[in-house]
Image (tube, rainbow, N blue to C red):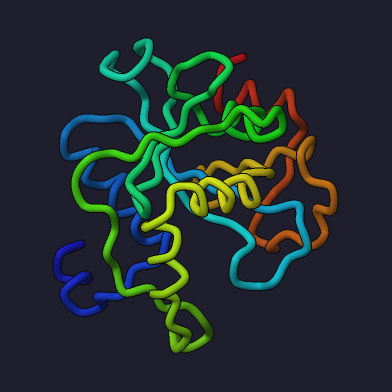
Length: 190
């Protein structure tokens, strides 16, 4: 079913790439979930957030049972300079706030998609994406801009942590805000 869809629509956004990556991970018996981040900076309507995947660790990269944030669009994992370990979405948001976020580019495909976005998918973002792929510093700067408000997809809805949202009214309407403690208890068992 996914292959048939991809043959018909070769245009991939961060959301579709993340859903595809999560599906592929499930084929290999990895637990994963779709997550998103949104900026607290002035929103421009096209570069305000990003969709990624969290993978439940099997012990290969970090302690077994911990969530690890993975970006299938730019083929990287995230780690904290403070702790020196791979981190989850919520830990990435905290690491950005502390200036301690770093990325680990995975070997292999650096990312080479057709990046179109807009009401009719008529805005070509290939140059914008290539700029981030070719420069780790630019990619990291961009992550520092967008990894501000964490959201996790569950049961057809994205839930965001209200603690990090300065102006939640300007966030997309399909997001539902929940308090910090509810967010942590629901998604991280803290």
